[in-house]
Amino acid sequence: MRLYRSKDHPGHWVGEDAHGSLMLWPATARGWSKRTGYVGSKRQLEAVEPPLARGTGWPGGGTGRLPARGEPSKPLTIRVTDQERGAWERAAKERDRGLSNWIRETCNAAAADDARPRSKGKP
Image 1 (spheres, helix red, strand yellow):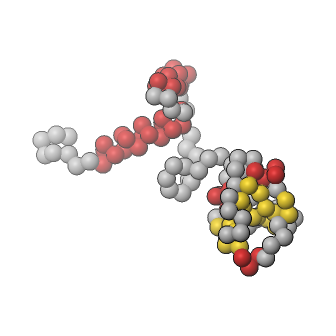
Image 2 (cartoon, rainbow, N blue to C red; image 1 turned 90 degrees about the horizontal axis):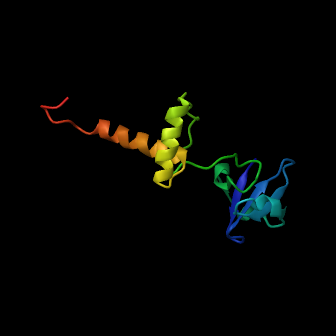
Image 3 (cartoon, rainbow, N blue to C red; image 1 turned 45 degrees about the vertical axis):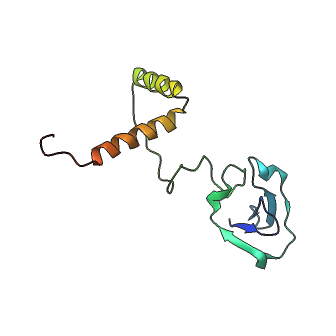
């Protein structure tokens, strides 16, 4: 399924439905439910990446949120104890963060610390 942007319809997406027909819908959460048939010229459309319409309900946009930076990768799954998960959830809640965001930020900070050059006298 292809996704397009139109200068004539700012704040909207134009994309194909399951049957290949072009549809126009608001670029907002659940905007696909407000779709209408696109009647403009296809020549005026600029092709864009389908994940940009994620969250609008368009079937070609995929699901879930885009990561804050970079390209999405495969999910990473780890097994944790109930006690670990509870502690992590409390830590995330104390910082007013979602669990996934807190874990990502904590791991990225630890990786950045490991990447820093060490002085000669320290391991």
